[in-house]
Length: 394
Ligand SMILES: O=C(O)[C@H](O)CO
Image 1 (cartoon, protein in one colour):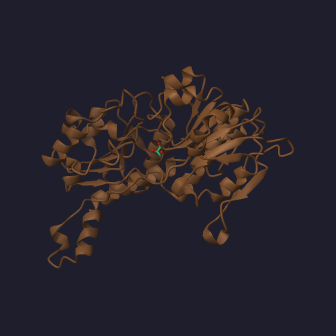
Image 2 (cartoon, rainbow, N blue to C red):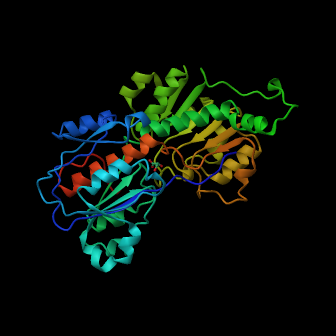
Image 3 (cartoon, rainbow, N blue to C red):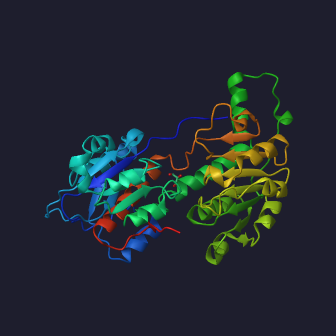
């Protein structure tokens, strides 16, 4: 079992002394649909920055045109923790146009700064956006979240303050789908146990006593066919898997055809037929504890449950019981509640589970794209332009 701390967090506040004056969009060319989305809105990508030296895998990235001839008095608060090396060049680029400060610095100079802040730029769940913070930022216009999940934000309360929220659904898709596949393969082929056997140099071990199952041609049930779910389906197709999916609101006919997926109107049908069930939904009041005792009981005893969405989508007590009693064969979770689990949590005592510390987007590429997508959204709001990815209160 693998446990650890979540990757470094980036959080920032963006302060503007005057009106925003960036002719902006900030985009990674690999986010194709996002780019198309922006191109339809006449975005001008005439600037670029280098993510690092080419010898170290650095690339040239197009960024939005910035009206450098205009005065740019903005202040951007940026706490990028462990991601500093990865975002170094992006930070240097931003520094040309904004003054950068940290959240700590903001809190220490709240009185002087609070009126200047127009945007909060956050990675993961930091900083905490509560009523007190919102009350201290009278000119706040946007909270640009790096990540697709916004369950840590009280959207209604934020909207009541007249503040917009944006997210990064495109930047996260590939890396999160990769983690879904990695968990599925690792669980099926018992990679973590295998690693432990190798490390302990267990001479009594024979592979035939210790078999996994194959992912190839197995049935995968994807719950939530959004950007990430679709990327999972594309990968599963390469493994010749039979792909079932269930969406609460919408059937996705185009995606279905592209990957040869079958739509299950009833989640029960998907649960009963799948060898692997992968959860890729947003956490909302409707999806909270979507998978409980009843749903686990519908799954095959040979099935594996994979969760790359949010921990609370599963009733964890029910999962513990199902794994203990072998109602299902195994689980592989990148998300739990809380994160990390307390040391004595029963999930951590099971041997038919893999748990990773919410690393779906913990890649160099994803972190950069998330920061870029968030900045694109942030600048769009500040400039009164169409917002590529706005999240609305429900
Ligand atoms: O919400 C997301 O996109 C991931 O959990 C990373 O923040």
